[in-house]
Amino acid sequence: MNLGLFAQINDSTHSFELDSNGIRIYHSADKMPEMSISQAEFMSILSSKLNWPEVDTNCWFDKVCFGIIVYADGSIKTNSLRIVGSICNDDERIDKLKKQLRTNLDEIFSDLPKWVSGEINNKKVAVMLTIPIHVNLEL
Image 1 (cartoon, rainbow, N blue to C red):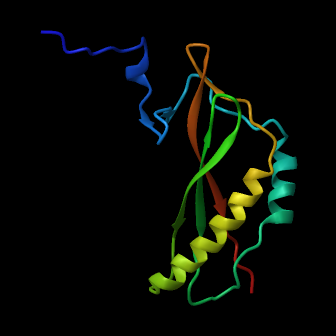
Image 2 (image 1 turned 30 degrees about the vertical axis):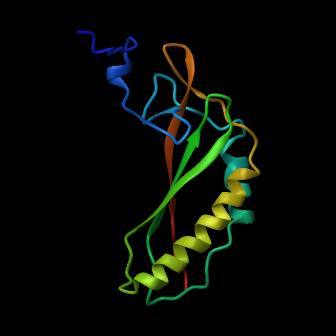
């Protein structure tokens, strides 16, 4: 009986998911992806293009965790958005805030230059990253 199980060396140390096209998206890599621009340039782009939703002191949050996938060719695909530290009991309002932020962050990341891809065993791979954006509400 042949079960047809195959594994690449070191795959067991790097967990992954398959995307809709069957591409392995790793959660970590030997060499993690990096921006091809400086962090200062990235922060400048983010601060100039990020449009926060209208402030509502009764429904806000402390941090946004924005997930991206950096593919082997350096292209970026936005993946998820999670709100952390919400002080809101209005799920509809939070969903609206998430949708507005997701749309805006999708636009910002689609305009960024390609990244330097991650690597496992010196082979370029797709890696999922989470970028935390801390929110400082000033009234």
